[in-house]
Picture 1 (tube, rainbow, N blue to C red):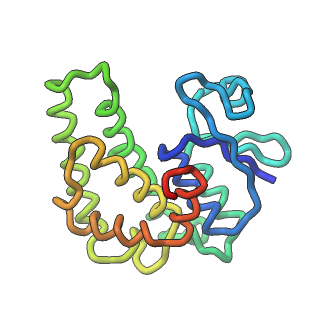
Picture 2 (tube, rainbow, N blue to C red):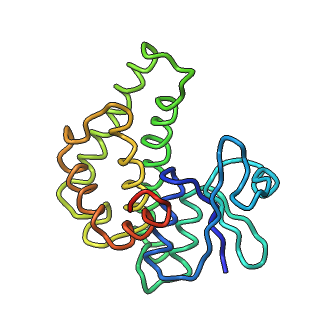
Length: 203
């Protein structure tokens, strides 16, 4: 069965949520990102030369990396879960648009703010840029329960994951009402609770 390499609470939480949504069988292996060792003592860089999570090892030995790609693969294995619209439809490309926006405008703008080598003064404009992107996300999300409207997709798990980092950056998420409501709602979703418990983020 597929094996998901993860680190607690980072971007690998997104495909982990997707796996919990589908009910597909899988195993987990935790990675220490500072030492690049897995919990079994393996050299993670020998498994994934990129050196970061998530990584999903398939039954045939194929390794998939990049969270959005892994999440879409998971969705394709369990079409009944409706974690992604049918390929080559307008709805599918809108999902790709959301995944790309979350990855490039939210996720990547958070990264430098966690870097201890970046001083507080340099972080000020970075925070302002992130806040602008959060405002855009809040507007795009609107009052709908999910990013695609009424149906939960892999983009929702990814957005939930990234929003979980915002308070740790000293930014009050309640400034964005739609995003705050979205995060509070998804925090109660069984798949989210299951993934977070498995990663030791919830008791």
